[in-house]
Length: 578
Image (cartoon, rainbow, N blue to C red):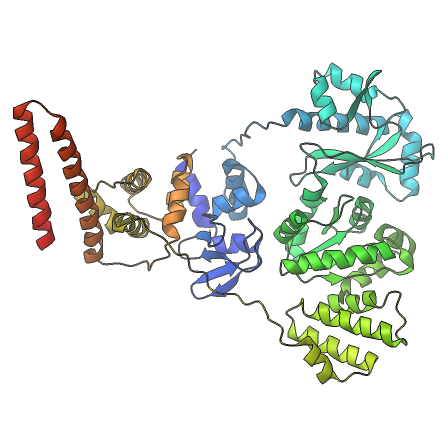
């Protein structure tokens, strides 16, 4: 792969602009800060340097240049990350091949790929006429059928099984996929005589199905794929791969409960929608949502179960400093039903006017309460106070207190007193404390830090033939020196790309960069670090020779070693006077 092309791509994009597409960044000083998407971050701990074109999380240690960020965020290989960034920069890298590493679950993904093709083909044969009629009657047209790869399992209990056997898949893989079951009578399909709605992972690969009855012959409306090595409901969001670009452009993600809600929204041009796959919202879901947008709208079913799910989801999102807004649907309708009944315009109007979480909470807390009862009113007011303690929006708290004061006839000062002093989370600068093992360790790390930031320091390192005692530091120094000799300059972001083929080196770079020292230094400082490192080498060599001399029997060799020890001690003494 041509390093010149790679470096051209990296220099053609600004890491702040790129990361801002995924994570909201706030300028503080010369750097930008945001919530780290690579761990359960509750406050901005990721720093992005526009000057150095690198990012560093001072909490989990994630660090790198723009390529590293795209690789980790999008879960793609380096060539894929290069292509993504090249497209952003408008640079052609068509000659670079994208090779994917071997996936231990490749057979399972292949089984789903084959099954999808079979189901889609079934729907488009004479056997699929009634199923298509059913879909059309539910206003799912052929474009939606194609877009969401909807298919049909026929009324044959081993059709897919036989098809997969012909394709050479093992019995174990077929069962592990969750599509085939083994019984005393052999192997058979889980799904038959159902409309098949594929479920996807974040990359858009089919990893499961929701099979729906369409002729009333089965009491189970939907059968969903059980959890498998590639399908874990608590870690996936339906339509994530389709919605992510739209969410980022609009900076809003709409969350629904079911995949039919997503498909219906998509049919009217609302494409920034995802859904949990038939499970409660989890922390993994939140991590995915944070990668899409910080503005979240909860659009759950309009019934009491939907209200309860909304309340639970709000509480989880608040734990991660995400304050969502809410759309509640009338008549206990879900989004699919509402759109079909009232149409696009009324639905869009609801989306354009979501309520804040406290208005939702006020309504939710009134459920099954008679506010003319002193006991219920007391319970209601106490619940509101508890909820207000969870948010850090001063204005929203004040507006809510005013509303509750009017409802309860309690003075706003009394309510404020009950609320007490709310501790608002503040972003504090994070300082990494390095526990150096000794002054030699410190000198090596400081020297490396300045080598990564100053060309002339690399030249001083080469001129003094510095031998770093630590193996990892020595390797990094050598690679920096090689990069400088090859390209004639040193740039942290480019060096990190250069080091990507050397296992473990970027971690060492991260450790060094986390020192967060001032970028500029003088020659006296660098000479001090070199002096300390050389001092270590002299002491170490003296110790080694003192051990060796004890085991040597040859007198001539003993004299040679003794003289070498004397010379080194003399050198050490002379250095101490400098």
